[in-house]
Length: 247
Image (cartoon, rainbow, N blue to C red):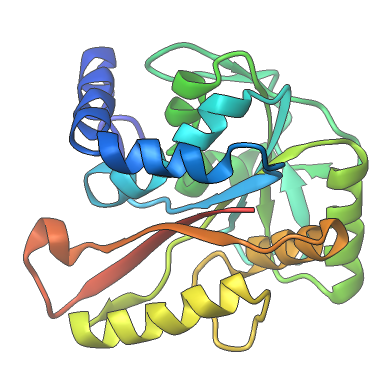
């Protein structure tokens, strides 16, 4: 997806990140202050093209920059293939324009390289993670339709093995700006309350894993930033929503 969802050129990646850091410096300082002295278990970030949702994602990743965990479980939806389990990738590393990241082996999860090769929701996160926490190893996971037992077992495994969690999801898709804001407000509130009932998001299944992880650890997601594609395109008729959280 390099060259489409995010820059393929290393300098353009650095330029994008530097631009966000310089224009959002006060917000970043506030975000970092808000988590000082607190245990952060994970993040929820959007996965559209960086031009649309990169700012919202990077604001969350500035928290990761303070933590630099050893192992990160990066969990996103399966956009291309219907699946009913959680799948990892069998490669030893993934490449990015700013260098490779090591891929962890975890035999708790079945591996399927083909499904991962066609999925953008995880790949767009990797350069950000590499930039802010370059020594972290990644366990990439795509999650399909899961029953309660699968959700519980996955969340417990990730907690038992001390993974930092990054959930990749966008919010509502292709509504008017007014309708998107309404639906996204309900979704954001539901995410913060660990309530699946009113969530409109392509990453619902990964979110359910995060919800169970939060229930076990006694935490709840806290909103970092919300935006829509309309802020970039100016098109108020067909809007996608994006939000980031920490928990």
